[in-house]
Length: 199
Ligand code: GRF
Image (cartoon, rainbow, N blue to C red; front, side, top):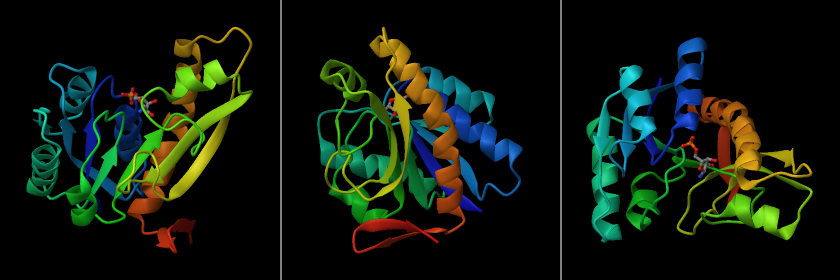
């Protein structure tokens, strides 16, 4: 069983999808040993507590090096061997990639490399794309950039607002992310020449 830390900042619906999958699927392969949040009093922390998962808050104090070290230390204190970012809105510094090489996953609400950054859904809508989606990727030193593990498309419908479109994207994330985390936990994903490949 791969011990993982899940990193959150907000509502934690992706965390919930992971908790539910771990609970439902005896072959999930990963155990959430800690949930780390950079914010207090977010719904994600309530979800972790309800599931009996320990929580740690590492507040951002303006220094990326110290913040990154504190997050990695918290994960390792609980025995985590990988970090799974689930709506985590901070950028980790290079120390995290050095300490968890090809062992940090992220879900992003667009079809990367389109629309990286914190406003992916707004930008997809503003650009008028017909299809956007979800990308799950390994985290590297650049923002929303590391090797892509899997993607699913989500259609933009007439009249979509940012909120409506994001909810549709999140529903796709809730299906995709647990399957990727499971494959990763079971050792089915390799990185070869900077690209992720499923065995
Ligand atoms: C997700 O769409 C994630 O991709 C993005 O922020 C959202 C977080 O949602 N970075 P939640 O906290 O998992 O509900």
